Length: 106
Length: 128
Image (tube, rainbow over all chains, first blue to last red):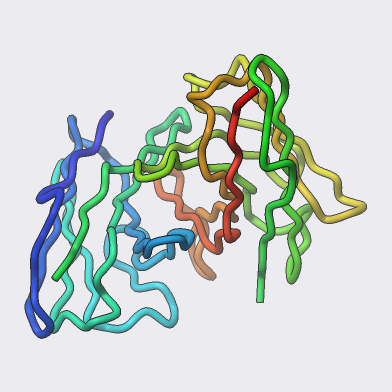
């Protein structure tokens, strides 16, 4: 199973509502997690089990989806949200796969 | 607060073995419903899961790397380690260790996991 993300690059402004889509190559009966990565830093967990917000993550981040399509939404984009975002899922092997990333830039 | 810190040589020689250690603080690597995992990221590229080890020492690996990778626990030092043999320039990357969770406080999942927290990462360059 492979994950794709769209768009791969997103130009946005502070205050925008941003949606990133993660698509699986086949229906996955599993959940996804979302991570934020800033330059020179390790990824940071934002959302797990598709829609559960990690403790300490602002509520402007939300996740949804099932089957082959999952979304990460950032409402009211803030300056600190400009980063690259990755989705991740597990199959039954287990084998953990990341999407290729979406860069959110000004 | 759980923290992870990678350590090891920043330079590896082609065809030789890459060895990294992850030191965990704030949690015991031999208890709890966790796995301990290695992930890598070539500069400017995406993330690749390498493998993981359970608190009891059971391992799983990315099939693309399985033949070259070993992950082990050192419970006396609260560390887990990665060894990758026969390295090439393609193995040059930032290497991260992370805690691999599949349980919340109330529920465990068979088809969900998430990596949190992550170490800061360490760059390994494979070059002669």
